[in-house]
Length: 288
Image 1 (cartoon, rainbow, N blue to C red):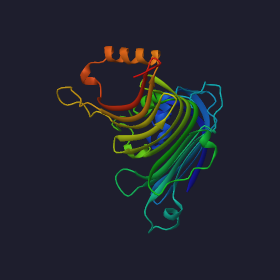
Image 2: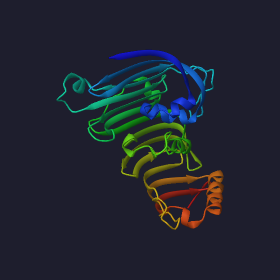
Image 3: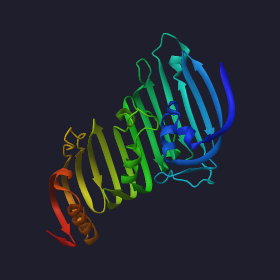
Image 4: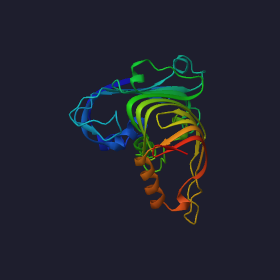
C-alpha cells in the first residue's frame, strides 16, 4: 500500500517528526514553511518514505554552503526505503537505505540494520560542496565523507552536529552516523577560532578519537584529538587531549593574539592536555 500527498511543512512540524532522521535534525535550524510532496508506504512492517520540496519559504540557519534565505530555492529529496535485498525476500536481513540530497550542495546516504530496537548504521557516505556533484560511493563499512569548499567553518559545523535532538529523550546524534573517514579540501578552514589557509586534510575516527594528517599554509603534520568526557557528579569534566607532531607551524601576530586571548579566557582545567612537538616553529615571522 502506498499513499501520495501534498502539503505544507513547517519548521516546527519537521522538528517534531523524528522518523525523518537527519531532515528532522536540520529543521532545528529552520524557520518558516514550504510546500512538499510525500509518498508513504509500508513493507515488511517498516515505513518507506519519500519527501521532496524546493524549500521556498523556509529559511535555514546552517553553516555554508547549506544556509539559505526563506525565498531562495533549494531542491531537497529525502528517501527511506528497504534495500533491494530486504525488499525482495522476507528471509533477507531487514535493512534500509536512507538518503538525503540538498540540491548540488550535499548528499548523504546510509545503509542501516533494522533488526534491533534502534536502527544501526552499517555503512554510509556523505559529500559536501564540489564533491557532491559526483554520485556517492558507499564503503564496505564505516562512514566516509568528502568536503570540498572555498571556506569551511568547522566550529559552526561542530555546534550544529552536537545540537540536542529535536524530539524529547532522543539524545544527541548517534556516533555511527558521523564519519569514520573524512577528506577535506578548503581554501580556508576555521577551527577553534583560528583560520587556516589552503587546507588539505585526511582524518579517521575511532570512537571519539580523531587522527588527522593535515597540510596548510600555516602547518604540516599529524594531530590527534580526544574530547573530554561527560561531567561527573561534582560538575567536573575530564580534560580532552591534543597530540601533535608537526614538521612546520607558522603562527602570525593575529594567531598569537588569539592564543593569548584563549588562555586568558579559559580556566586551565577546561583546556585540553597538550602534547605538541614542532620541528620548524615560526612565531610572528621569526623562526625559533
